[in-house]
Length: 267
Image 1 (cartoon, rainbow, N blue to C red):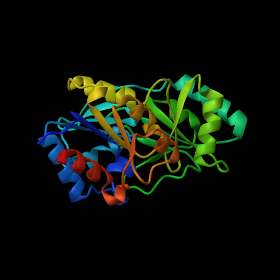
Image 2 (tube, helix red, strand yellow):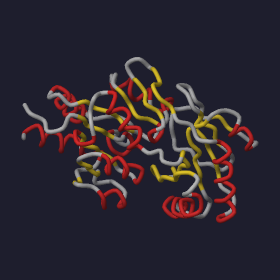
Image 3 (tube, one colour):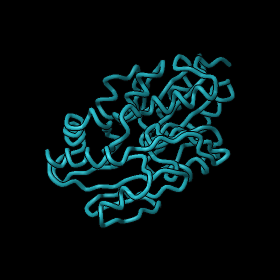
Image 4 (cartoon, one colour):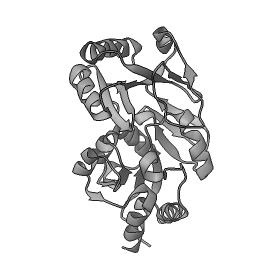
């Protein structure tokens, strides 16, 4: 059995995971067949390690994972953080003040660095339903009291795309701004993306961009598609990602990853 890629990179939410945060047997089997044919599988997610680890453990996943929009390379089998990039807190504070000068007050959350980094959530920030704990904060100074990977922003009137657009136009020379999912607009270190994290992880395995097929569903996957030889968008993907994809497959609920892998495995 021949398989044309040596690396399969998959986003988690909206891509590998179904809406109930499970991975179908069909998709598990297709990934197992691809790895049996010689390909490595790397999960590349916007979630930081603490919000990813339980999913990886449930999958029996013991390889490398790129977490936190590329900030963290995590060895799932060893439960060890291999690399971590943090957001300059002074720059983040400056960026927030500039954005708020344009659009008014924002609701904020932040992801602390480390294997057990907490997610801090401020007043008015809408957290997606999750079994994972968050820590409420009242004073913004708490955001800057320990190293963080990213800051999440929400606005009471602007939708995600509009907020990301304004933020990028206002502070794009200081930080990176990505839209990673419904209600998830993030401020990241300048130059950080899933592509930078994936390239680091791939290099550890002796693999290159030319070896890679990548699957995703959101604008934060655009850099990864730009890096990989083949970028495959899910049917449920954001239009910005579909516009740069090499191929569009079925949705995450309809085993879109498996559809493509099975076809490639058949040759």
